[in-house]
Image 1 (spheres, one colour):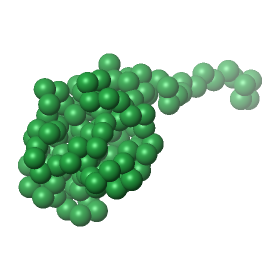
Image 2: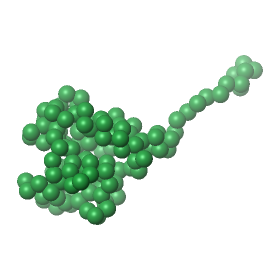
Image 3: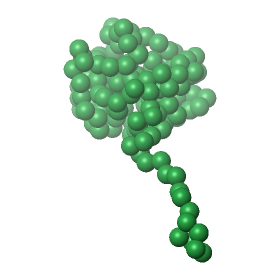
Image 4: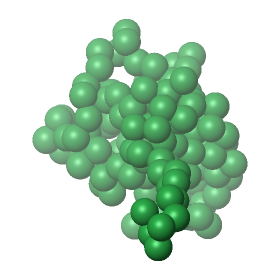
Length: 142
């Protein structure tokens, strides 16, 4: 009550925002970045490194802040087995779980969108030039 007037305030909680997130909104943001150049340490919107790309996609597409580096992203989220990867999950590459050097976003049918030396592209998760380490589930997407 302010000066005798009741004021209703609409607030959006983190849970409401997470519920509103959909794979199609995250995928749309990711797809819009295709063809943009790679830049070491770049977080967008004009160029990206791998984890800058995944961070940007989740922030813009799902209103979700995720850690900045591939290793930090791998360390933070619940790992899922290869057979249980869902669209929108993050896929990780490197020497092993303690030396993650690359991340991409799984988009289904064995493919991911990632930012690498050829820029933001769609490619196979199991491409011979990547050493697949694992996948992690960031959030539930409708």
